Amino acid sequence: MQLSGILKELRESRRFSQKTLAARLGCSPSLVSSYETGERQPSLAMLVALADIYRVPTDYLLGRRGANPEIDLAGLSQQEIEALRVIVEAMRRN
Image 1 (cartoon, helix red, strand yellow):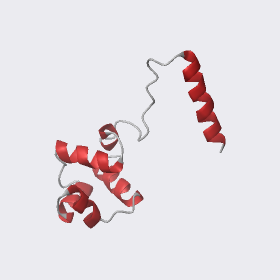
Image 2: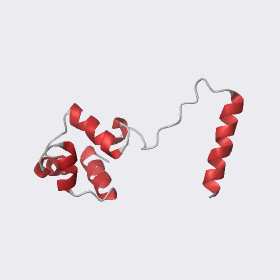
Image 3: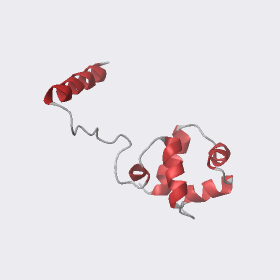
Image 4: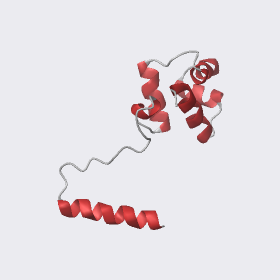
């Protein structure tokens, strides 16, 4: 999916109107619309602001990876990793 579709999908899934999102971004609703139609591309600063509002990595907005990035397990002991695995499995069962 392209950036324009991802932005529209995220906005709608959060139940934001273009006007509401524009107010949070400090821009006009027409600018939000132009991002969602692909007429314009957000600046780097705007891309970061969108990622912050939606709580997703910028890579997700760019279509590079999922909204839930892998957990960095570096520096954890095998016992700690196993404890996390048990927690995740318990959450999946609920």
